[in-house]
Each structure stands twice: as C-alpha cells, then as structure tokens.
Length: 251
Picture (cartoon, rainbow, N blue to C red):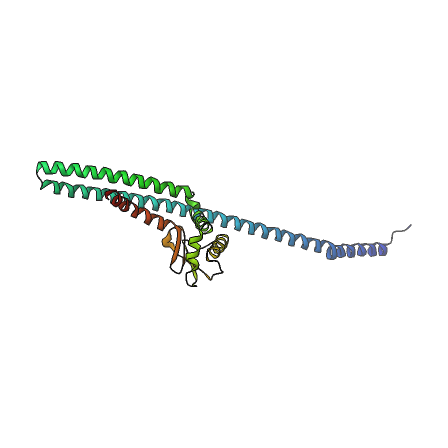
C-alpha cells in the first residue's frame, strides 16, 4: 500500500472541519451556558449579600434607637429627680422662713401638725400608689399594655349591664368615635366594633382617630356617652383620687 499525500490532506482537512464544527456548535454553546449560569449565581449571591448588609444596617439602627431611647429615659428621670429635689428644698426653705416668724410654742405646735399632716398624706399617697401600681401592672407588661388595654375596653363593652345598654340605646343616632393611642389593629378594631354594636343594639357608623395624648389604650365615644381604658384617663383618676378621699375622711 502506497502513502497518498492527497488522501492525507483530505483527511487532515476533514479533521480540522470536524474540530471547527465541534467548537462552533458544541463547545461554544456549552461555554456560553456555563458563563450565563455563573453570572446568574453571582447575581444571586450579590443580592443575598446586599440583603444581609441591609438587615445588619437595620439591626444597628434599631439598636442605636433603643440606646438613644434608654439614654433619653435616663435623662428624663434624672431631670425629674433634680426637679423634685429642688421643690423639696424650696418647700423646706419656705417652711423654715415661716417657722422663723412664729414663737417657740407656736413653732412646735405647727411643726407637730405639719408632721402629722405629712405622715397622713404620705400614707395616703403610698396607699393610692400601691392600688394604682397593682391595677396597672395587673393589665400586662409595658410592651403589651396597648393591646391589653384595648382588650379590656372590649371586655367592658361585652360585659355592659342591661341598664347601661338601655341608656346608651336611647342616645340619638350618632357616629361612634374610637380614639386610640396608636394605629388600631384590624383584629382589635373588629372586636371593639362588634362589642359596641352589641351595646347599641344596632349597626353603627365607625370612625377611628389616633390620639397620642391617651399614651396607651383607647376611648370610645357615642353621643354623650364615653367609655375609656387608657393610660391617660387612669393617671388622671389617680391624681384626683387623693383629694377626694381626703375630703371624705374629713367629713
């Protein structure tokens, strides 16, 4: 058998054409698919990294806000303590000046009367403080106070006695106004509305208003009737409690 350069040349050409076809229609598409897949993975990883960074940033902002809130509370507490101390000193100075113009016997008598009065007021204030603190802490811990007060308001409506229902149902038809210290959750709003309509004995128009002055909880008003379960009203009742009880004791 003789070696043919022509045949060899054709075979070599066929081999090169085969290599070109493989590279053109097999290797290059596979390489492009792998490249696209790699870019997709890199984009996914980049997006995940960005979300992680955003979450860390939000966490840091939250921690900073909590720290600022704690510092602000501490500053307010210190300011209150300073103010109370100044008032105490002013009251003592005023008392000393007043005592300076009295005779020894009158000063002793006045001092004794003041001491008895202070002890009685302190005891009354401590009793009122204990009752108020027990009532407030029985509601729920501070983070749950808003939800618990709204729940208490709904329970008060659901337990409304028949005489109260009759009185409210005689009120002229008017929109029902619900004030809350914070935006009203849908679940709490639905329960309050259902309870209010149960008291009214009819469907009522409904209006909700955010009133930060309430501090926490809500206040329900329809016509001349009002029912509240909120921190502002409780504090106001506590402030008015001591003078009222002192007047009853004197009587």
